[in-house]
Length: 215
Image (cartoon, rainbow, N blue to C red; front, top):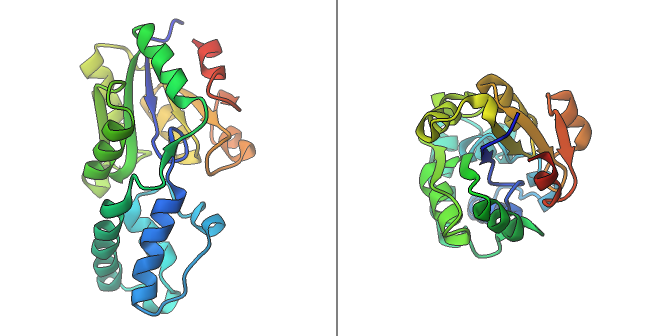
């Protein structure tokens, strides 16, 4: 099978956004006199959208729906201000994307981050590489729901099996499988190789350049 397109996860796959996300959430927690968390802890909060991250970060005693919603709004406000402050592409990603562009490989971003933030980060850090960047618009379409991935394949006029789905988490691997795409796990993000393999990754790569070998 010759792969003709690649859908990338964003956080933990293309960019290291851990510090900006953590700093924004900790600012909200500090303002409420709630305990904060270190970066290593936030690493396991990322992947299912910011609302879910807020729920995990709040104390168990202050985790009502109203509190989550209020803190979510504050967190998004804070994060929007700094979402590209410390966030940077992982080593080799820029070179990889440039090479894929030169080979006319179609590329898109599909993230569980809010749609507006996904587009802001993807298009600011990679202004020429992606014709599509899709984030979370409604909870029902959150990965591992494959709807948006399949919509991208339709836009490209490609069969799902002609597309690599590249991500760093079990959610990404499950999304790929649900979309009938080829799941590729990356080890430089926020999850382990064992988690990726047990979640269905057909290939696990340790550097961006290894993706070229799959193609």
